[in-house]
Amino acid sequence: MKKVIIVLIAMLVATGMVFAQAATETAAAEARPEVVGIKIWYSISGANGEFFKSQVEAFLAAHPEIKAEEITYTGSYADSATKISAARLAGEAPDMIITSASQLYPGEDGNFRMEELAKDAELNYADFQEGILEYAKYNGQLAALPFAISTPIVYYNKDLVKKAGLDLVANPPKTWDEFVEVCKKVMAANEGVSGFDASDSVWLFKSMLYQNGNPVVEQKGETVTPVFDNESGIEVATYWKKLVDEGVMAAQQHDTAEKRFQAGTLAFVSATSNRLAKWAGNLGFELGAIEMPYFKTPSVALGGSTVTILATDKWKEDACWQLIKYVLNTENQTAFSLASGYLPIRKSSLENADVKAYIADSELYAVATKQLSYAWAYTHFGAMGSMDNFFWYALDNIESGKSTPAEAMKQAVKETIAEL
Image 1: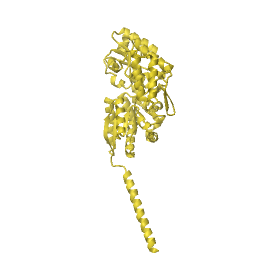
Image 2: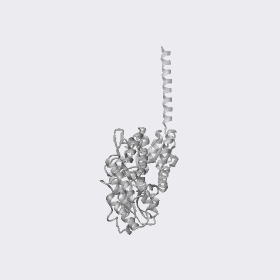
Image 3: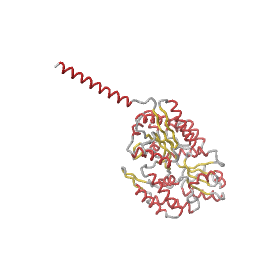
Image 4: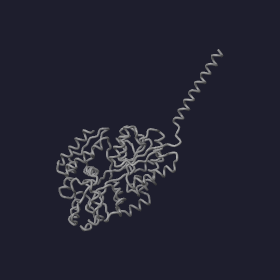
């Protein structure tokens, strides 16, 4: 009997040793690497992108336990979407992305880890401006965080406007009908000058729809229904045609809008608010800005980049999260906003002395930040990019006369439904 007991004890000890060894091996496998490498992709161009990179480098210098295996500029939003989608299909996705609608990628996978991460007290989630946070959601759930946020803004050539005897600082046009009359006066006073154009026609058009009481799409649960072919949508499309028919806006010339504006041959242009940092003091004329004209209600659609994490490895996720908290803290976000012309996304940034001084001194920045009070966020869904393409074709057909406004809107809705 003694032998049996001894054997049993030996077996239990051996088994315990096996379990202990397995636990040790598991712990070793889960132990944090000495240095965690992450891949970062971003679609912020030019000097703004370089400023972002400088912030990443400052973070890495203070965190030697994290290294950037890659910090890659991925091009335009469209190019970035193509590259990110291809990388995901190939199983080679970056760990962190900053691009337009970055929340679509985790959102479509049902990955809402960002909601849990955002509870981190160090992020101070409550300090984000609420309307801007909506821009980072997918199906009503947080799948990203706002980063480089902008709205469309109407810039104008003050020299051309002064020749028409107008003072738009004291008396800016409020509605789109008033705006058309201002454009005509400026054109009459300046030979060879066009009135108005939009560098991103679809972005502006969606803002105009919302101003006229049209939400673009309606969402119930996960079901998205485009509604821009109803009466309120067709009214906006009809106005768009009026801009062309009355000679205020050139047909099918949106790609050259910013170049023509900078050359002094276009009086007004709707472009992203971040252009103010690039253009102010760098054009051959005095630059002005007015709040976006409206139909029924002032409104502008939010745009720009959001940031999210695609990493599935927990240590890479943690490294990315530490970096995100760093670039989104009040000090760094404020610095990025002031350097880039993108808008402050934190309430505390608006209380910053430098931001207050900039708003007080810069008519352009004051207009851009004021528009945040009536900015709204798109409903993000998988076929949103395709819908925007259908919008582009619709506006092209309206401007060329190939389709009536009603026909173009109905066709765009039909195509969007098919894509959905």
